Length: 229
Image 1 (cartoon, one colour):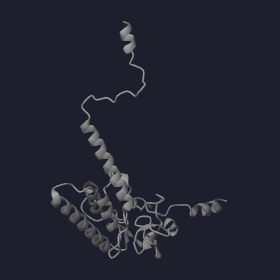
Image 2 (cartoon, rainbow, N blue to C red; image 1 turned 180 degrees about the vertical axis):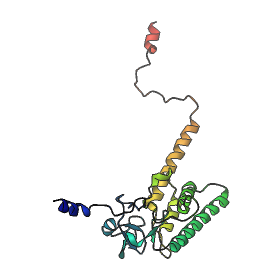
Image 3 (cartoon, helix red, strand yellow; image 1 turned 120 degrees about the vertical axis):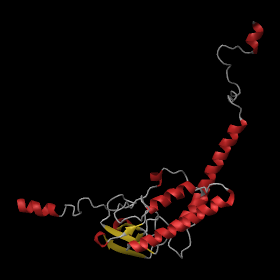
Image 4 (cartoon, one colour; image 1 turned 180 degrees about the horizontal axis):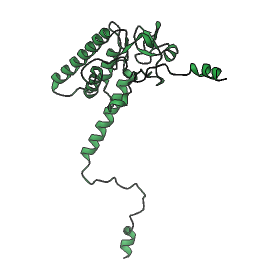
C-alpha cells in the first residue's frame, strides 16, 4: 500500500527547483509550464490559453501558427510588450528598439510646445519597467503578467494608446486602430473640461437655488405669514 501511495503522489509533486522563478500567464494568472507563442505577433501565454485564441487578445492579430515551447527550453519575455524571444540577444535588441521609439515620441512631444505628452508618465513607467531595476533587460524568470494598475497610472490619452498599439506589434505590421481607446479618452477629457469650466464660473460659497414649489426653510415664514404679522 505504501508503494502504491508513493506512485500516485509522485506525479503530483512540483519538479521546479526551489528559488527558481517562473512566468505567470497574463490571462489565467497560473504558472506557465509550457509556453504557447503566437505567430506572427510573438506574444506568449500558457499553452492552454493560447490554444483557445483565434486572435491575439493583446494586439488583435489573427493567429496563423501556435508554437509550443517547453519551459525547460527557455523563453525570454519582454515586460513591455509580452512578446517572447528565444535568446537574450533578441530580447535586448527588441528592448532597445522599443525604448528608442518611446524616447523619440517623448522628445517630439516636449519639443513641440513645451507641454507634456498625454501618455508621458505612462510611457516613462513602461520604459523603466522594460529596462529593469538596474537598466538591464528582463531575465527569463521575470513576471510575465503586466496589469494596467500595477504602475499606478491613470487613463492614457489617444496618442499614447496609438503609440502602444504600434509598439505591441512586430516590425512590418500595421497597427491596430485604437478608435475605442481614443473615444474613451476624448470623453474623459471633455468631462474634465466641463468640470473645470463649471468650477471657474461659480463664485466661492455658491449653492444651487431650491427647486420650484419647495417649502421655505425652517424658521422663516413666507410672504403671507410676514404680512399677517
